[in-house]
Length: 96
Image 1 (cartoon, helix red, strand yellow):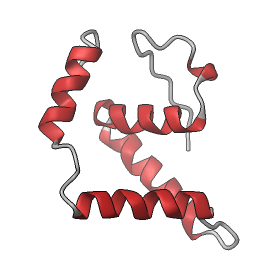
Image 2 (cartoon, rainbow, N blue to C red; image 1 turned 30 degrees about the vertical axis):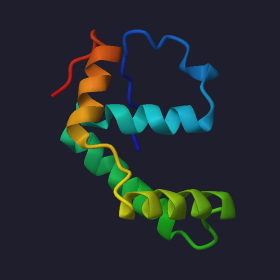
Image 3 (cartoon, rainbow, N blue to C red; image 1 turned 90 degrees about the horizontal axis):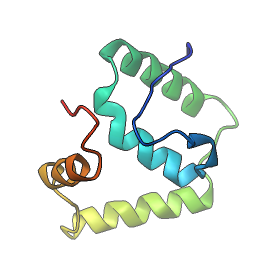
Image 4 (tube, helix red, strand yellow; image 1 turned 180 degrees about the vertical axis):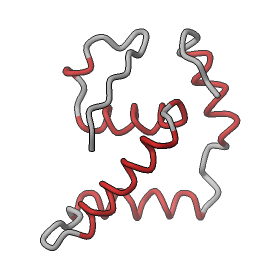
């Protein structure tokens, strides 16, 4: 995957973020990335996940199972509510 440079207002020290914070940040801002980069990222992810020897950790499997169970119980947060909260929290970012 080629280099991607994005300047997010209020996030000047992203190197101090832990893995969970980075994943949350990526998930929260994916809608701002150009479609061609999404396609590139998607292809790379599939390649990595389908690579022999790459396995999900038990911790990640457990977290995914808990998330799916939570959604099955109706405990998810609607997209509109998440977007509303993100716009309030990050008013300087452009949300599409």
